[in-house]
Amino acid sequence: MIEVISDLWSQSGIANMTWQQGVMLLISFVLFYLAIKKQFEPLLLLPIAFGMMLTNLPWPGGGIFHPEWFEGGINWAALGGHGVNAAGVEVEPGLFDFLYIGIKLDIFPCLIFMAVGAMTDFGPLISRPSSFFMGAGAQFGISFAFVAATLLGFDAQGAASIAIIGGADGPTAIYLTSKLAPELLGAIAIAAYSYMALIPMIQPPIMKLLTTKKMRQVKMEQTRPVSKVEKICFPVIVSVVCILILPTVAPLLGCLMLGNLFRESGVTERLSDTAQNALCNIVTIFLGTSVGATAIGTNFLKLETLKIIGLGLAAFAFATVGGLLIGIVMYYLSKGKINPLIGAAGVSAVPMAARVASKVGQKENPSNFLLMHAMGPNVAGVIGSAVAAGVLLSLFG
Amino acid sequence: MITTLINYAERGNVLSVPDALKNAGFTIMVVFAVLCLIFIIISIAGKIFSATSKADKPAAETAAPAAAPAAAASEEEFSSGSLRLKGCDEKTAAMIMAIVSDNTGIPLSELVFKSITLVEDK
Image 1 (cartoon, rainbow over the protein chains, first blue to last red):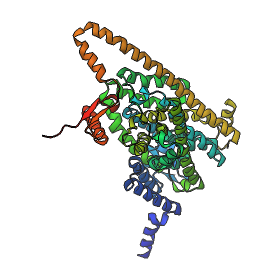
Image 2 (spheres, rainbow over the protein chains, first blue to last red):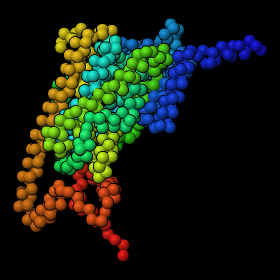
Image 3 (spheres, chains in turn green, purple):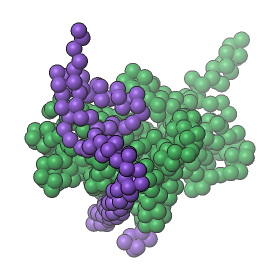
Image 4 (cartoon, one colour):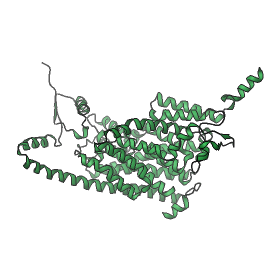
């Protein structure tokens, strides 16, 4: 009888659990709390947390995800049922081994970008093209974080992957990291999405520090209406220009603009609807859970993760500074007609950053509605971060 | 920059500080250059479209003189200008504008309000 109980105990997950797995389970519970109670980007943080929890539970006979099968390329033989785990024991592939293929082959981030494109109205950007400069300025956080990550000892690929957190764009961060430094994917995705949720706390103090009350009170004039033809031409022009210059951005930017063309063409209502809703939701589930599954205790619980979290925060802060500085330059160039707060919306994080800019402006002047003006730099930031990812991929890929 | 690319394409190589600064500077410069190029193209395209639509309007007026007053009225109605509020506070006005935009399905950026007047109940 005692022998039976002893066997049962030795085969149980509790007996086989390592301390790293225990800590990761606790971290996943914290993420559950942040997603459900605090509503920090719940659509992504919840599946990420669940993927993290599943992958860190002790699984008899192997595991649900084997990152070692994806080092370098994909070990198709292992996925076919002839794989060995890190300990050298022959094991069957798990569910996340198959789902992770979608990240490794860039399918999920690109499909999310297609959905983002289908949901985005580039009208405010087309009506005020100077917003492109604020979107570009906000990419300064990427450059800053790249240098800072190098100083902290990360190799070029790791530094580039960490730097892209400053782009405040989850799919772009996942896309670049899965190509350059896949071992950092879990930490970078969690940092990127957590900071995006924290934008209402990170940005306002910086906005107030860098701008005067007079600047924040500027009421902007309504922009010109944008014709349907312009909206249809925009995704085609941006795709051609960007991909001709930087072919590495083709998958991301091509999908973003394809989604937008579905929306603006007016003849693909069903495709636009699918991209915005069903496809987006399905891919979000797969992307979130498989990114969470990469956060395995032995890879995640390192000093590097803390460095990534710190660098991510710095990247976000300096991205805001960059956008604001360009906004201030435009405030002077336009003789006080442009509210520099909208520059802070140049960090992608659509539409959270635009909302924050609008809210801060409204605090100074309750009749000031900056949201539509801030959407211009906001969507320019999406294009800017994709271009920055393309440059980093060309340099270090 | 090509030399840098060759040196650091392999994993595990930590960049020197000057190289990191060079690559960071290069990245932001390319981002600015690409977005600046799109800015120029979109600005030119916008001007062409505006000029084309202005050129089309007189032609339409000649073709359908009866519609001319309506078109003129429409143009006046949609010209940009400040919103006049009569007996209505700014918060309520903002709510009304948002509701109109939502109900009509027309984005707020494309709607122009001339005035919002409070109608008293009798």
